[in-house]
Amino acid sequence: MSTTRGAAEARGKGAVEMSTAHDVMDELFRAFNDHELGQMGLHYSPSAVLVLPEGVAEGREQIVAVYEQHLTAFPDARLTPWYKATLSDPAVTEWMLTGTHMGPFLLPCGRYLEGSRRQIAVRGCCVAHVEDDKVITHQVYYDQLELCSQLGFPRVATAD
Image (cartoon, rainbow, N blue to C red; front, top):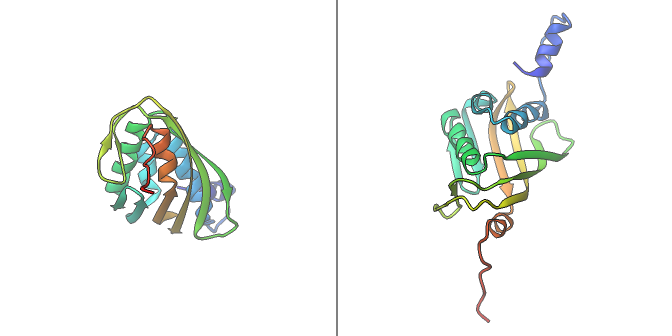
């Protein structure tokens, strides 16, 4: 049950107040920062789709597996939202992801990078559509070059 819905019921109102897309995403971000995989999954509809630079996860089980991979790679990961667009749906949020690279991380090319013990601070943005207090689509965008350079990838020289 969402915080907004619970608050409305606690006040004894007859009608149940629906959460906004940003309310749902705030709860998802809290669950991510608390590393509560089960709670993260509950914020998605059973048929939700998560799109990231690394690939697409379809359904709650695959989505939770993606979060589990990220939290294995960055066990101290924290997502800090710093801007929310003034839309009701979709929820558009800019954020900063910080953490220490300690385990295997799936790269967009399909290979894994073993833990480097490097600190990251990566800016990103996500767009989420919500229906009935559940995320149905969630697109995540971040600067892959920024992340790769922080993980120690050498810059690629271009031919002159």
